[in-house]
Image (tube, rainbow, N blue to C red; front, side):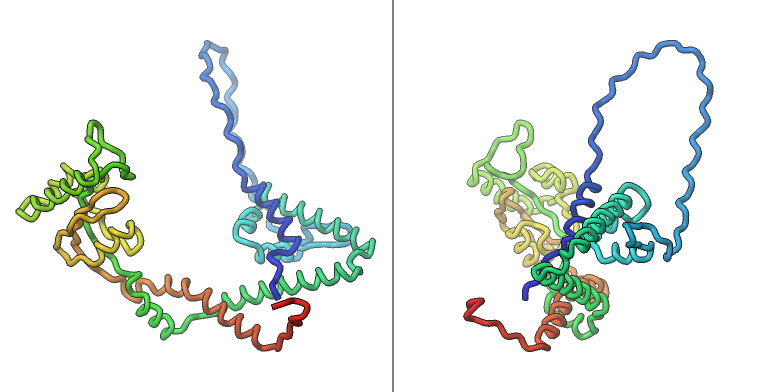
Length: 320
């Protein structure tokens, strides 16, 4: 059975936190006042520091709606089950927490009236309550399993070995020659080269470097990537996927110290020189791997739970 995404309770909370998260409107600029001589004014005392918020014990009732009471511990337990942005809105005393409390009060008051009218006893509503309860339980179980799962050493190392290329790093420099339509803007008074002209210029620069020209000096003078050009073309170290695909493929396949042929990308033609190839160690990326594989392990655990009980679906009614 497909579970509901959220209970009505959480939907109403979303509306509250969305309004809390809105930044205050920017006030209009204030024109500088004309300074005129004034009579001396009495010195104002600095404002007193706000008193620290009172400590509220866990069993203190913090919200009452009719005969329904909610303690601090119950309120905070409820918040712990909500998404991060909702918890953040009510993390400390203030407008955010108060709005969440008011929203709970509104929800409870309406629900109490519904019970008085025995709305909760109608078959359709009872079914809906049951489904929502199942949804909350399933979500809570998935969270508990995710919190308790600890990937074992063999699983972590197997993932590292299978995805080792993701942890490769290249330290490289480049010289960029832009062409018409490049994402890189023209320099002042610079000619907008055609594709063929840019390729010819990159090829000529490559010949100069192979003949003994200094890569960094030429990069400073000729590269259209002004940021790296000022650093002699240096891009520092970067992992797979940080650069555009043609550049990425060339840089990670190029031997250390070798100058590439012109590599075309949406920015122009690149001449790439790789200085180092490195791979992060297993210990360096272990926390990252744990975070990456936990969702899959949680899904596998939930799938095993779903298979524990037989399920029969009437094809004549639901279809195939």
